[in-house]
Image 1 (cartoon, rainbow, N blue to C red):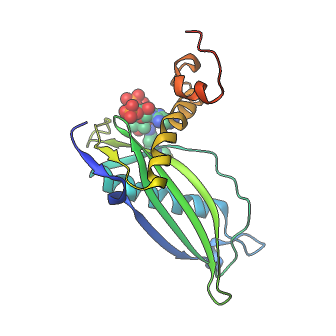
Image 2 (cartoon, rainbow, N blue to C red):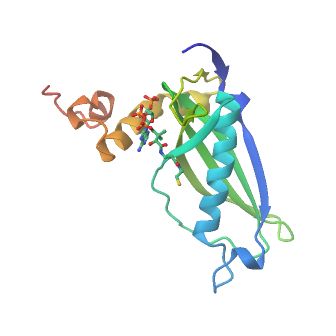
Length: 175
Ligand SMILES: CC(C)(COP(=O)(O)OP(=O)(O)OC[C@H]1O[C@@H](n2cnc3c(N)ncnc32)[C@H](O)[C@@H]1OP(=O)(O)O)[C@@H](O)C(=O)NCCC(=O)NCCS
């Protein structure tokens, strides 16, 4: 990789208010709208890191544990955790705030993967990430295992090649 950049340089914050057009018939934010916002904030973080055009390659499983209500203010914070060759993993944390009630809750956490591409859509190398804080270091360390898991699930990596992923299960590496 040509260059190194601090994780904090990609930090991106997006704030939205849940309006009637964003909701389902129970007056809660629709999952698809939230995923759209996640995709945008994470793409901006990946662009800031790479200074390139980026495309979404993968979104890890997202579960919707609690609804976000009409009128809530939603804050999405995204940061690149680690870069590989042309791909970058982005961590997104979502919180919902009922401002009149002074109540704020973290509602979602997710990892998206973006690939930097040239004008012809061909993957292109990105700078390395330099983590600094304890959280950034933890996310950086875990990124390799998460990458292996998603590449195995996408049938882009053989399970026997996912060595770091196997090590967390203490499985014997046979090949
Ligand atoms: C993402 C894309 C550029 C990868 O192109 P490709 O020809 O498969 O390129 P490569 O095999 O060289 O892979 C490039 C990188 O993508 C990563 N990648 C590809 N598919 C992936 C997946 N499902 N999950 C995670 N990473 C993935 C590879 O691991 C590789 O990472 P690395 O360079 O850091 O090692 C290509 O599949 C694409 O353009 N997809 C459509 C993107 C898009 O339109 N997104 C919006 C969806 S509507």
